[in-house]
Length: 232
Image (cartoon, rainbow, N blue to C red; front, side):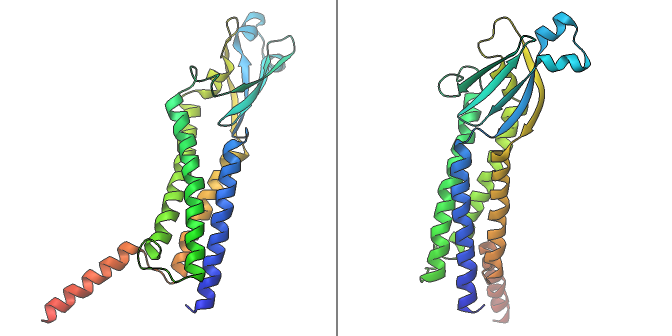
């Protein structure tokens, strides 16, 4: 591929990497990862609420990785309250899993920045045939892609297996028991899915620029070496 087209492709990859870094940094801090509804089971059972009557006992819940808001409905109007995971909910949530999600969000942000630098370096500089060259372009993109996938998988595990919404709703509640009524993943969660897709697109653009996958290149070298040995 001509040099101009390579510069253009690497520049596009660099811009996509930069947008991934900024998106990951902003999405990590926003309380827009999950929206849901929680049912005040105690109140609903006391009056045998069914159908439309359940709406009086269904509250709202929205949160991110650091803070959120809940509105509890127990038949006498809503009680709105804000909460923070650190340090308020540390005793109520699966802390290790939650911190791991935040860690991989940081990994996505960091290595998206690293990949951006390497793409622009390969576009306008003279890269070495080491981590700054083909191996580096695939390596940093692969790490970011896998990390963004892990963020989604771990967060879903925390929500579904760890019953995160119920833990938050029942925190510091002595008289009422709440259970999850409905859940849907919000914008910040899907932004990480977008990051996953963009990093995959970056890998395809690198391949389109004529740079082979590192392991594929090594395999071809071994095959050519073996053919030369047979000739002698």
